[in-house]
Image (tube, rainbow, N blue to C red):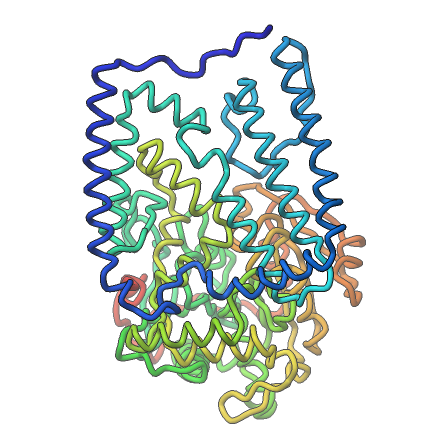
Length: 604
């Protein structure tokens, strides 16, 4: 019989007991602290204290139960398919214990980082635990998603929350079933758990009773010190935006300026992280006069701002400022995520007001949606009941959606990577999170004004009025078919926020010349992929059939970054070369150095 290899050394009994006592004491302190900070939250109405939307998910699971009870044969058949897999697992485990080679019954997804430690495969018992969990979790998801006859919205909710449940029960999340944690506990005589409780207390304290998980070393980064460093100047400011004009690095530039509208859900510097990852720095080096909107992080004074405010004080104000700074009335523009949705609405608004108002001559969309009928997993959180609860929550917060609310929502979309991996690392292994600029940006969230956010959720996600031609904005009914300028549509193969299927729908809504590409990776890494990194790939296809999967079947794969493809397309629509423009040399004086002041304001 094969002897199980030891994966950790036995602890020092005295020191281990001492540390376990300390863990117990700190655990009591943790519970007392947590309970004190919940007093106010528990006094709120139930719908305001439902961070994981349990109440909203209940109707979905009730319908799921009704459908399954109405078809008992389906569940019996599902169980019948599960038991043979378990028997296979028992047999392969027994063969391994007898010293024989045996192929695994089930393997983790290659992208699943939870079971990468060698002990999960080398140790027979832990391999059994891992495979048993994977069989159960996969079976559960297949069973729930295979139920027929459900309302599509409820089916999405049931699948989403079932996955959350399955992820939470992973053996990697528990001390006694994770060999890495057991090894660390024995090797450190339990000090890892003691440090983990200290980390947990600090995160609860920082979140004022809510668990604000640290994903990176928050002291390792500072905007303007080691991120958001591309040289430039703030040349315009109003209540909602600061406009940054970047310092040229070439003697000549394309005549038509490039104006970027990032999402206001996060800070603009996702496009200007380190020098190596900065799209803005790279675009400046290609010879563009680059302007970027830095959105204000709203406080109580801005709580009344609307989606129309973002159009008028954002898009139109930025266009006027670029004209004053360069003398150019016509620009090219980029919109990222919700910034791209706003840009689409702005283009339709300009078209409705006549050709003279069409000041944007070519537009690029990074992971941006106009048709929200297949808008990804965020739709799980959006129905009238949940929006109503959100409205009450924003009223209680002074007319703002606090940044922590959006952070929790986005983290749930990738709970294994953005929640449970840090629970294991920070609290069970007792480690400090590593410095990572992208995760620092991810935690640097913004608040959102109530009326603006409700308009966006209802008009786009709930009713899809922008795509239907039913959205009224700035006194105009928006018709996307009147947008006739050239557009470049970037999407990403693994994007769970703006799926490529959703982005592709814009090719059928807009009337001008269109280029659509799919990049490797997801919503962030699919966009922020500099050529120097030589990572991922992208797909192109000049044809634009009705079905995006047909587009994919005829697409050509290219290695590396899609940025050069965009530059080739965009430069041909940017005019002749002119002498480089220096920030402050136009009609607008320099207000301060980039990255400005608005980007440094923290959310709640």
